[in-house]
Amino acid sequence: MATTLPAPPEEVWPWLQQMGCNRGGWYSWDRLDNGGRPSAQRIVPEWQRLEQGQHLDSLPSGDAWFTVAALEPERTLVLRSQVQLPSGRPFDERYGRLPTAYIDSIWGFHLQPESGGRTRLIVRARAHSRPRLLTRPMDVLFWEPAHLIMQTRQFHNLRTRVSAEA
Image (cartoon, rainbow, N blue to C red):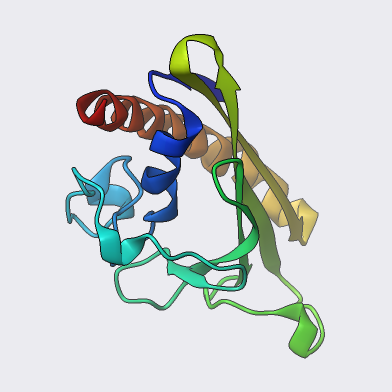
């Protein structure tokens, strides 16, 4: 999915690097993805440090998170989530075998400068899960439509915030 934002990458990037529960939020439907807390309406300096390997809470409780998998300031941010099923507890395959049932996903944000001081924000999401017999129907019936709805809202809210800053 992609959208064009009315600001250059260096003005879009601070919004991306402060994402996460217990930080700037996810700029989507806050009741669903930020524990009901409103996402940030401004750039917050203390949320501007982001490093590869850092955890960004995906739940207000901090019981699940995304890991910063790749980071190239003002260009690329890739978040990774590895979750056991059905518990929803995070795992890391570097510390043992893969669970019997799991979802391993990435959520990538890529910024491309465009003419007129604008940015093309391209978002890619990919996932690998097991057992496919159970996880594939859930992907098609729930996760893919949910991602479409949430991502569309995030694009809208980022556009509004970037426009206000510009």
